[in-house]
Image 1 (cartoon, rainbow, N blue to C red):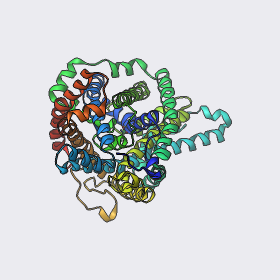
Image 2: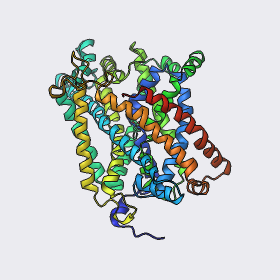
Image 3: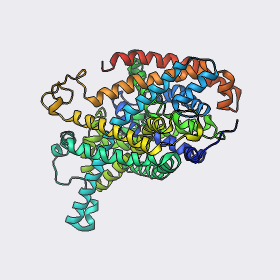
Image 4: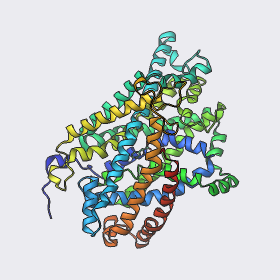
Length: 499
Ligand code: PHE
């Protein structure tokens, strides 16, 4: 049947294959690659983790990525409408739409804290601009060669992160700026907003990333970093596999980094044209995302080792001690500014994708009627943006450190006496709930739906593999490997979730 496609619906599609691939890479590449990958790899001991991570990306992440894209494209509408339509076509229960709701809830939960962390990055970029301006003011143009925070002592510099966490006003301001920019982009629609942002920001991002890693390899300890990332310690690997934690961290990181299990790629698949090959596009996205994570490792670890910092530094690795490294190198302020601008760009293209999932529902009327898609784009996006801002304020307030570490909102007076969930901040609680439970659950359901509910002829046609054996390989992974491995992780994840 030929559907009448309205003007607004036309704006709600990708302009072509290249644009889609860039936007999907923009979603995948973000805080997960620049901050989370180095610290998860650092915590898990480096090389052995990297090896298992590669396996997790290509044996589990990639098949699920293809599944999400084809479910979205074949279903159309919104994530929920898409699932409803496919379930109906294949005589399955309508309760499969729960999968869409879970994904939407996960995306919304993630973007509420993602924006706060992006706000920290934006704040640091702003601080670096101030520092550079000060240096130029003091020493003329030669000041541009100054390290960051010249003359400040080490305690003062590493203490800057704690000071930021003690300043709810600053956190809320920068979170507010970030979410306002994101809201503006999302109201512009898929083609005029998300796609345009990705095509402008991603090339600048790649340029800065490669430049920074080259500089870092030159001025830092390249040997130690390469050894740490690429020389697996097989003795440690065997022990870790027995313990299971490396596997769980690797699959969890692969899901987060590839934006899976959150109905995100499903939503992006909805806007995908028939002429785009899903296996090719998905493979490009997986390679680009993994490449960026590894290059980000090459930007961070040489500096970490050269300045004697701990690789297992957690979030603090980026936000605390790395500032110290920028303090110890020529052109450090400039180097730091480039790093944080790059990180903000990457975070922005991911945040708008997360934002788009609930916004697609809010703006798209959740009907199967293509003609009305995007009708409430502006108002729907603005309402979602306001909700993200408000919940983000709670995240920011829940960071404020006090002596009384056992309260949920820490020093925030009106809620100061609420009990903490297992000593976590609100941010950690939602990060744990989404990362350890909702994303794996979403991925598990996608695998079962694509492998068992959707008919074989439908998935074969939609994926359009050029060779039969490639299709059969995909089908084997999605029916057996993904559900078993992800199911196991889910059981473990629920065990360590904050409730
Ligand atoms: N993939 C993004 C990152 O690595 C985060 C993300 C998760 C985006 C889930 C969309 C959906 O930063």
